[in-house]
Image 1 (cartoon, rainbow, N blue to C red):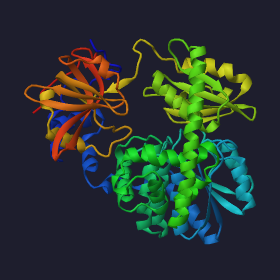
Image 2: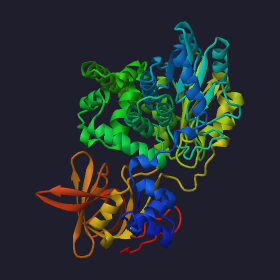
Image 3: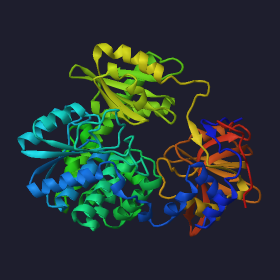
Image 4: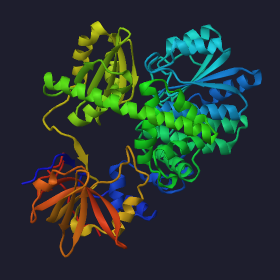
Length: 580
């Protein structure tokens, strides 16, 4: 018997309702698509913007908290001829947001300089070094991007030196807002903005649109910044639903048709043709290269690339980012090996998060934490010592709120911040054990059902696979976090052939009733020894189409396989229905 390697979480049984199915049908989808959309929480009222023109999914940016106050202060800076410093976080989200607001403010006629803090020297947040940079440069207005909500002390210090601060951010908001002239953050308790899921670059993009409307800037330029907003959205793993999906659609259109020089150079360095760009390209090609500079040094080259309009200089900068990315890969590999060795020598025990401490570059500990959290299916906290403090990155899967847990340890921490699934903190070395104890209790999880979960969107008999289904599922594009490529559980299959394919993959031929369907299992060479002709199986897969020898056929991209009846769901019993 072949056991699945993942726990398949099936949809709850039952129809999404006749009215909902009819609403989806009005946009060209059938009941199967309606089931997927309902499971993903797309309300009937959201369907017109989901399927309509991308612009229809954008909200009124004037509804962002303090958007009007931010516009008034920027108008004042323009009238007075003040210098402005835009401070963006050093990850791809912050870098893209920085480029958005620098370009937007320059279009409005302001004297603007962008600055990216050092990951190692400054850490997250608005640092006093940034405040000093503004003071020494005679810049009396700072605008933060993807940071600043938790920088109350630094903002107060800036005010004491005659420097106003506008915060644009999307991180968790403390009970007491920082003393900035404006805090543009959709997570504020008093926010009326319809969608709180924006990334830092997404907030910057919507504010840029508001500034163009209010202060007479170019609406065309503001709209063209969607490519940068899309990169920030995907790199920050924001859900590609609601307004984020609209931003992703607009951004992809720009990236495919007319990428700005910096991004065109980055794609050329990676060997990617712009028309072929997808959100996966953004996540696995563009974002890692933008992030690499800040992980192995300073992120200035990445910021410069996004602001560069001369192709030759853009190509030089893209080459530097490619070199930094290669270094980042090697540093990550070494740190991950070390973290695994530490856990092997000191097993973490059952339940709760894993804590690992070592001497690794601070720029890669978040990547290591993410990989460990994925491998172990539990929260991972990875720390490294720098300047007498421990800097830690935390990563976790669904159902865990890291930012809330860190708030529960705030009295022990020097600094902290982040999101539900990705966060970080600084702590004195001598308080590490206290933090481990308390944070471990706050993040305790049950180990009764170990192993990663695979979310299944539809469970169907093999005979229900057809091109109509393929076309309906394609209507979910662009897919990404929160709206992933759909996974179907296909039952009633018989293995007729299995063989190894180059690259550690397995090729399968699976019989349904009167015909067969080809399948490819990427990275699953183990299936060659586990499956035999005649085995009755069910597979979790993505449905695709392949062309070979002038013919087109359906293909299953297999994620997991189990003998019939072995894919015990994580919730209710698997509903297997023949949907017309």
